[in-house]
Image (tube, rainbow, N blue to C red; front, top):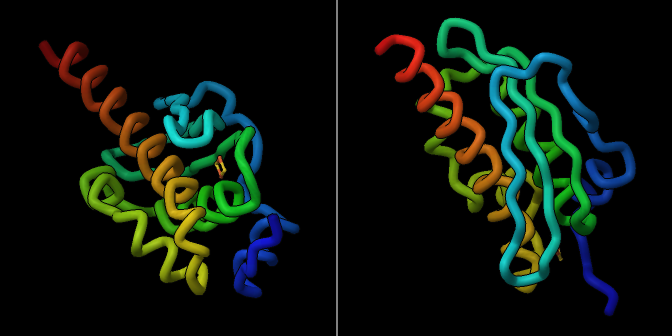
Length: 129
Ligand code: FES
């Protein structure tokens, strides 16, 4: 099936930003989509509650790679609480839209980010207790 992607999606898919692992990441999460079975991993470096670096590895499609690429750019410099509130629709808007059948691919990126932040917060609670 051929999908019509925006120029921004094509740009972020063809030249994805922040692909790879972060050595000694403060937060790592891997999530899978129940809709397509694809998976992705997100790595975060966090200092003073601020995301200072974000990278990802994706085994998903072009829409997932473009979303994760845009998302990792957007969250850099953001407070973890702010980053946790980002909605998939916000990222899709920044990408110039996605075909509705590909919305779950952007949801997967958001889920993975939130999971990484949740894990980091749980770790912080354990350290301080
Ligand atoms: Fe699975 Fe896009 S179809 S992430």
